[in-house]
Length: 178
Image (cartoon, rainbow, N blue to C red):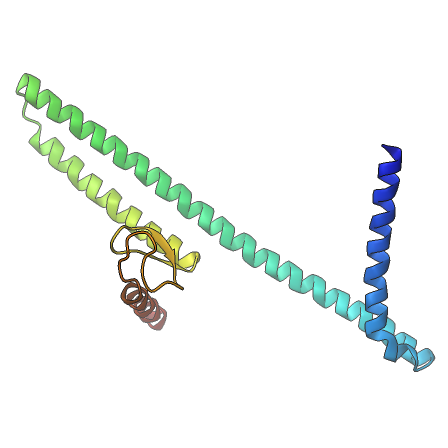
């Protein structure tokens, strides 16, 4: 075990040395300039390291925000699907009571149907938002989420480009209004 740890440590050091050597090769022309060139080299090296760190931070923040948004939308979809399941279960139990006991629950069933329709509309809107974040479209034929690189849905064969064009137009219209 100790030998394996030592080997891993040596490999890690070699990787770090290799990275430093690559940076030195990149800045080698500046080293030949004398003392002022060495100061320039050091400053340029730190500037590059700082810029790389800032770029990595910005990229990480952007990806984190995207993933957080995607997770929130997925949770909202799940919540609406649960609400929809509850509506359907309640409609079923009211209909069962109507069939077995003759109780009239048409107004309650109508209210639950409206609630179910609203939940389905919210789910569709959330899925469209999710597809937009993931740079994909929803297939009009099978409702599958498909990347925009396809002209036709790989699952059902429905044409997608018209759907993508409509989404792009809707997005541009929304951007113009804002």
